[in-house]
Image (tube, rainbow, N blue to C red; front, side, top):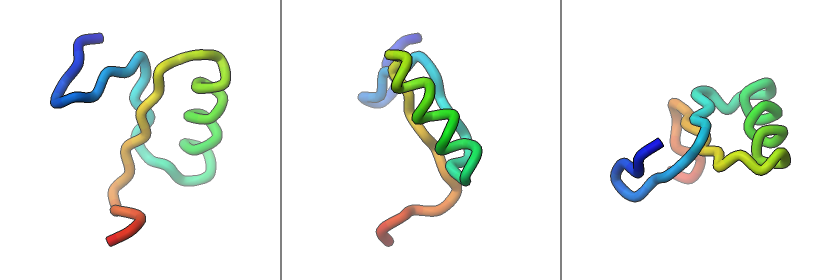
Length: 44
């Protein structure tokens, strides 16, 4: 995957609720470069 705006990842997980967070964590634990995208900013 090519870098876009400074982000370079193998997998993009859209939605970081309970299941999305778990999926992102498992993928990262397997060595995949993972980025998580959520609808709301956490610290706004």
